[in-house]
Amino acid sequence: EIVLTQSPGTLSLSPGERASLSCRASQSVGANYVGWYQQKPGQAPRLLIYGASSRAAGIPERFSGGGSGTEFTLTISRLEPEDFAVYHCQQYGSTPLTFGGGTRVEI
Amino acid sequence: QLQLQESGPGLVKPSGTLSLTCTVSGGSISGTTSYWGWIRQSPGTGLGLQYIASVHYSGRFYDNPSLRSRVTVSVDTSKSQFSLKLTSVTAADTALYYCVLLSREGRVDQWGPGARVAVSS
Image (cartoon, rainbow over all chains, first blue to last red):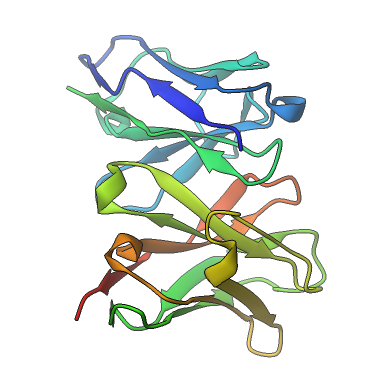
């Protein structure tokens, strides 16, 4: 199975700053099928990015995804107060589906 | 708008069977290319999410080899429900269990609110 490693584990930033999150795969992800999810305390995750770089419906433009092969990134251009949360990456290019360990973005 | 809701016992004894049901509302469980699945989030693994299994209304399914021998998933189109059974549970199966809607490719498009299940005597 493909192992996903997210870094850093925790990112401490201020509103208005830029956040860059990394997701590294143990082997190349087929068709760059990587998704990013945001999870707030007490809530289920929600899809932000799919196919490595496509924004899901209703997701603000400040969220962008990039990368290919084994290296993927999620960038939040200017952090809003509601963006402080945990972010998970997922690969769905091969079975079993796997997730990274998560990155917490905190103030 | 499609909604998912998990239901089932919140406490299961060790060596017992964990059974959860997800009720789908606001949309059809059949006649689609989507899959219906289960993902869990364990306190013991920090923030991590673990894919358990997914099933198409036609019966085709995928699972996680690490849980394969203990997992059964099924769909009941007449009730707009799908279910998870996990046998021989241990404390390591204590988790928050989410039912989800997956695209044909495998991205998770929709999540239920989650159901907490504890394994304890």
